[in-house]
Image 1 (tube, rainbow, N blue to C red):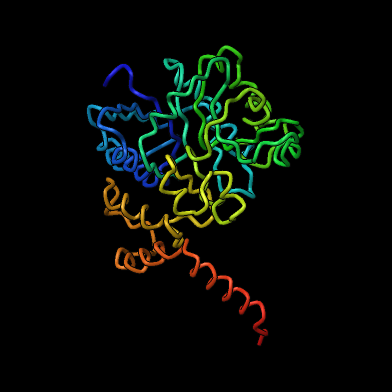
Image 2: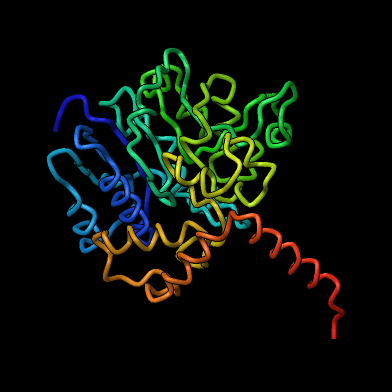
Length: 317
């Protein structure tokens, strides 16, 4: 592996290895021939069969190392939030600067994603004295967003902790892991780790373009499309670097326009291709492709509005 390889960190438990494997497959298929990556996967436990599947993606420019983390077991039950699906294993993010103490910089990224193109552009970001490069969830203005004020701070940026280009050296020097855990234990938290990151480092981050990390759930609103600089969902997806599938209805659970087709494609090319993941079989691809092609057209949107209006007027039996 080249010394100039780009470093990525992901977190998974045994049950989520299939989705981590599909995400890594998409990166390997989309990366440039000249790009090299070191992938560090943090886990509490992965069974040998799933480890071997993940490690089968390794080659001379795509290294994978699986690291079993110990020491957070005592916090698992105490810090669980019953109202959200994220497990306390997500809190391993707090320890990344300590676990990867041999690195100065790493890109942390969630497992419910698809890479759409090589991400070397993200790694060209100069961090300097910033703790991280992130993608804001809000449109930045002179007033702090509700997501900031509800946790008691006035930061103008509230970012998604599903992607962070982390300045590990500065985080270690400023004891950020300890501060994150203290806030998570004593502060106001609506999300497993995101509120802690925003509270502790949110006033010292640099912003990436929203197109670097596109949150699929935001694309259901035409108002949100402006944030990405395109006027249609299809154009945003085609120009995105990473698609974040941050929605209750994941593309392997429910048909998601434009996304399910891509996801099934990478599943078929992954080491988990023999493991069923979705009720949507490959025989549905013709329907999916037609739907995806029509979805952003003017006529299609008029039809959707007409059907919605008809349903509202239709009396209940």
